[in-house]
Length: 293
Image (cartoon, rainbow, N blue to C red):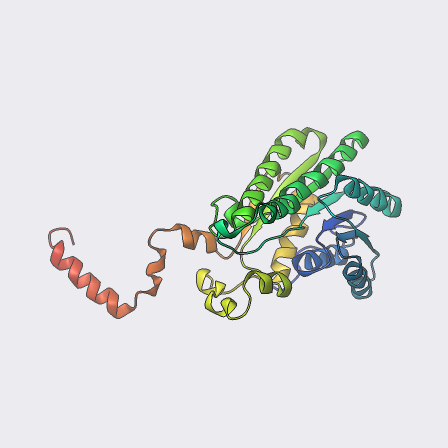
């Protein structure tokens, strides 16, 4: 059932949603579901050919219009041009999904300053650029709207070997909550989703190349023993960007099958202990603590 759409067919009717990083992977999956729910969608990234191909395929699948705009979210002028294109095409913008990201796995001491900055610029600066440009417009127009940011569970725990991403996503998490408090009076809600493992071909091949993906099997880290389905994430994103979540503001919702809790619990790894080993351990404990057990 987790592959089934959640909201009614007209849940986003009449809304226009801009999705950064919307041409591939999870961004494409969420954008497609927005279209199926009646929204107009603007997808953007730095690769126009990929965007145009994706837009054409999405339009065929859903029968809805998709605007593809080349935009480097690190450049504020390009972001304002994106906003202008969206308004020119659809009349207004009601939602912003900050999904564009960059990441790679590496020991931190192996990173150059430029590599560190690249991730920070795409994730944190890109999100702040888009939020600022769109937010200013909405406040000026006195228009209620919604910002939805894609973060990650290690935004609030930190993580080794993805330190630039952890820093950037942590900043986006703070931005989400800060704008929720400040811009709520303007009718602008700001929320975030922290996904766990949702494997995408391109991104995961870069993160875990070759045999590394098999050796580092994320299913084994998730209590539910599976990875996420795209539709599950799309359902949550559509709900948070819709009016059905109108009283949710400043929230970060984790969707990871319990993965981060599995890693947080000091003794959670004891799931590897077999029943026979537990029997042996129980007998040893009983002999040691006869008066207490």
